[in-house]
Length: 379
Ligand code: CAA
Image (cartoon, rainbow, N blue to C red; front, top):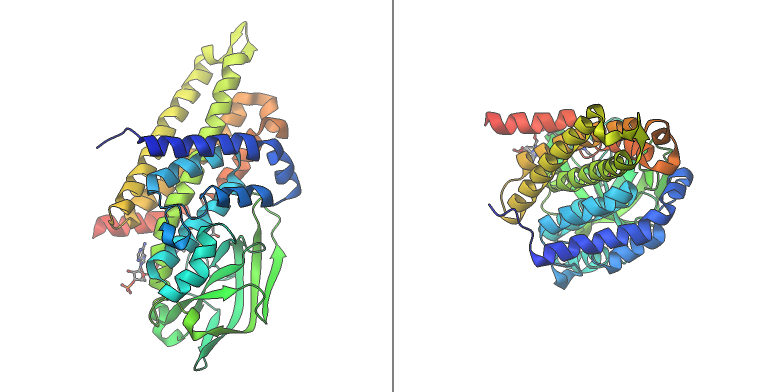
């Protein structure tokens, strides 16, 4: 096993670090306060190849490996977790799913603009009554011959208000349960498709989370992804990869908070010395550094297995389960180390603590990750 990063991976890491410092940091506090989507920054991320990182260049992607993807998301999330989730959803849930499972026509029409960052995409699985229990889809797509009629509501959809193309999961034959579920590519602006209310969230407030309403939307048959009944397996396969993106986002939130806490502890004095010289603080930082390194290794392992074409359901779930816990623990302790300063917005760590929580919820809660892992090890 080689723990050294290649020249190319180091370059991508540095480019993401510079971008985050120069383009994301300046107004990150205001975007969080105002729930403002980082429109200009996301456009630049597209130009840098960060929105279709692993997609083949013939479909507008950057053709990079998954370890580079982990590195880039970590650097972005260190500064702005909201920008990181826009990136993760577009790369992992939208582009990766289309590249692996869409038809050639679908790739040319939809993947190419999405991977090159000309437009962004969203993935619509969750519903008011179908979150963890994803097979209980209430959204229906009725087969009408050369089109499907789509009806229903999707909830908490990342990029919901800014996407141009949506992958929508819907039930086409309830009798067949998960074998009667399909995935469709739906365009914004189609008649009957309405973007609903924007959520007012605890964290990742710069990201754009909406409900989606489908009222007799005609979806051409050629917009179904894969064979009839493939939609649930499609969603599961896509989410396995998505969990690497969210694990990397969690890793970035944790390492960002750790770096700020370390810097603060080296300069802030109490009882006549820098607080890092107090064991109570030093041991917190030691735990953070150890857990962040372990989380990073789990992300790299899942990424390497993905590039090797292996089943990543277990390794992706482990990376997400662990990294999201580390993000939560680290940000809470980073606020604690900062004391009163940690509780005000200017010092960033309170935002990071709020941002961390969602990584234990979306793309499969921590409890769902434990279902996936326990089923895998019991096999
Ligand atoms: N990888 C690949 N296939 C999987 C899978 C996995 N991790 N988990 C299940 N499957 C397959 C099974 O093999 C089975 O397929 P076959 O019938 O062909 O064999 C099929 O899916 C059904 O499996 P189960 O009978 O195990 O289904 P289940 O209902 O018991 O539960 C679950 C499966 C793992 C709990 C699943 O429902 C799940 O992952 N739930 C969480 C959903 C989720 O992550 N939602 C996040 C929303 S998206 C989001 O947050 C995006 C965002 O905007 C940021």
